[in-house]
Image (cartoon, rainbow, N blue to C red; front, side):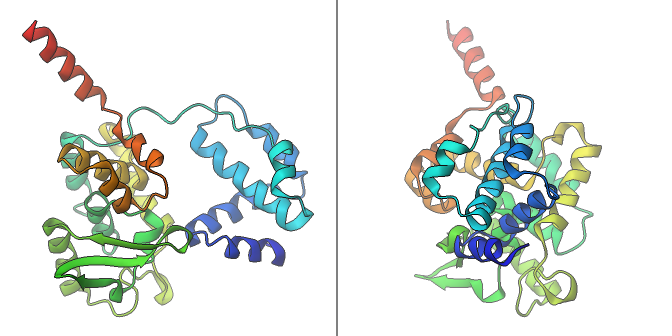
Length: 267
């Protein structure tokens, strides 16, 4: 990757996992015209969750390497097309039970990461980059205090269940610098964790949509069901805008079906 582009991605304070994703996308262009490459991939069949990173990666490339301004690219870049992400975006209690059974045999540290995802709501890049000293006690509450997306300070209280999971891991693994260490002493990569969620999804049809981000949605959905207000959830998830958090308000198919059935029974 050219120095100018590398510098721009660093200055934008993107998570390491996001920078790596953009590097991977731009590596596929291989000398093609970036705008033409992007236009060929913006079609109605592509999931919007795939289209948006493509567009963002090309935007960073054009600004860093070809000197375009934000205003110029607002006019020049094609609009993001693509089909919406599938409706099913969170596990219900039955799916969550299947999930916990499925991760039982996964080795550490991926087992604990997967166990903690629906208990903390952390992004996969955030949880993989945690340090041991990010576990703190503030005002008598045990928390994870770290720098999240765009280097934003994040403080996430641990539930009793999350504490128990973390304590078991600390006793058995005794990490020193990085909480979840991968190869060669570096923090484990999100890719290493996603390999396990993809494998689970491949062998269990009930969990075919499984991903680390689905577990973040699951955390949010469960929190709302337990009465956590939207402003608190916004802080827990590290969203800058409450409009982003409000996307988690969509009820599941099962919830809507049960509501209709209850209304019919009462009528």
